[in-house]
Image 1: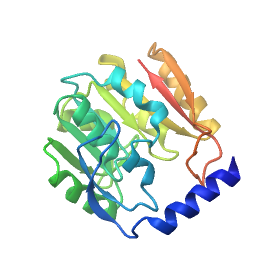
Image 2 (image 1 turned 90 degrees about the horizontal axis):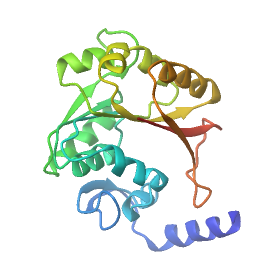
Image 3 (image 1 turned 120 degrees about the horizontal axis):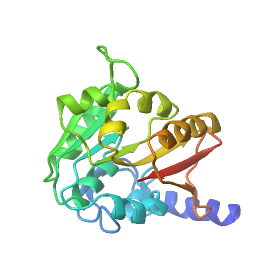
Image 4 (image 1 turned 120 degrees about the vertical axis):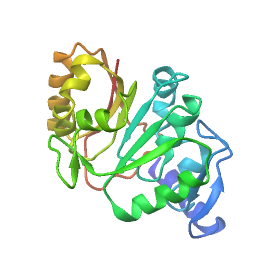
Length: 221
């Protein structure tokens, strides 16, 4: 399998154009939307295969009219997916990296959805650089669905969402980075009576992750 993956990557690198360009996605759950695609880094997104093991969960949890928070919005793929699945309901994309924020502005301006950008780290405090999800609810709206991918800050983000979880219990998909984060998230979620399904990464054309050996998704409803 590793030899096959390497062979496919070599062929892809040889025949596909280099460099990022705005392209309309022709396949998958975000079909018809525009993203900044570099085939050498975003090929799965272009083919509709990016984290495709989550597609059915997204379709089940994000229904027409669902207001959404995209916590960790780099690239805009998930925010566009939520906006499309919800029929154009409001989405807030949370991102802390300045170049990524600039790209989000470019991407969202080329698509017909109501997606706002919040420049902040999401955690358990509110200051100039950080915001809690409870404060975001007051600033924007109470979400029906939350997707979270913030590379090791998942527990802090849930600690900053106490009111949201207690009073509204939104549906969620949380990417956990490390066993300690997974255990911490499960402990918090179970106190709020969430039903949790755990999904592992696919072994077919898996994503290359340099930083975290343990990455899974918690499907929460």
